[in-house]
Length: 450
View 1 (cartoon, one colour):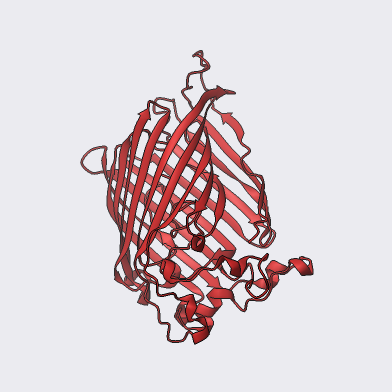
View 2: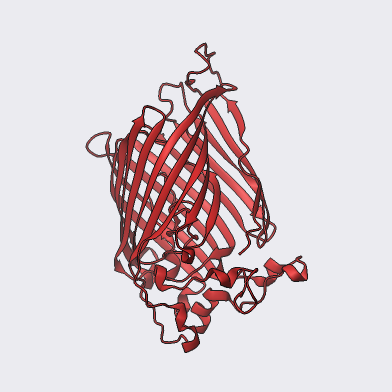
């Protein structure tokens, strides 16, 4: 499919510092400045995508460095993101992180409302769900092309989260506890809304609900009481071992989490009570002091008990100051592979990456570095989401190939621009190794992957 998305403005940085009462710094301009008081990083966003329209908005992150003695650590971080598109998609998100709000506790909180008019939906269980890129490629012959909206659905997500971390044995070991509430409204894509205002030749052809509509309304794969979404509240508890020298971009150390997530009946989860375990290990190696590093991440998540509704599958559950991400595929785990391409009850993934800070300088009293990275990502479903295919007509059974799941692989490179170490604008360009996972993808967002 011809990608007509174009980022008009997304990598433009406003470098602003509101350091109240900051002392004059007489050090060499080439040396890093010790930041004090409040600092602000911001990105305005103006973009266009053919099917969701113009996008407007911005990201603002405030950091409080106090008297500078803990820099590059901060006392408080307040993150705001707001954007909307002319076709009705949008992001309204607030995140807070601090070790100083409550003595001896780290508090991480989030309130997000995400509306998506064209969320990726490819089915379940990785390669056991057929994805044919020609179905959404409008340059293919009419006999093959269906619609750019065929692999899409609508979703509105309200997510509220509070996590606490406290010292367990020492500063390296921490316990983590908290909760996350999800309220999800889902349905087939609103084709009339996406086509509004388009020239006739640019309109999306009717797809009668697309693949999601077939799963939900025609083939009976998705349970009737799950089609429109629902609400789940997850309690979490776990252990964290963290020896990183710097959170935003560590050069050495490791960061390992073992987290249990439980959606019990007694807080309103009803028939969809379930539990999961998540294990994530990250490690960082310095190859050239403060310049070049090699890093890797291995993650595993699995259902332990209960029944998970389909709408809770496409999330990689996190804890602490890391928000819950999409399932495997996309900007935050498998770059270059289509978002939510790999959805199941259990899955394993890994990331390998080299990071090179090739420029470090001070501009307008702000610490700046530019870094290049090369990466390879892979992941696969290890525990299938059981589905009933008895309602699938014979002519559509090819959508469920009898193929053993294997690793989905991508690779690519990127550029990162950091302000005062903590505010990092990330650009990554990924390539899928197998066309059944996509072709290429460009991502512009914040922070290193891990």
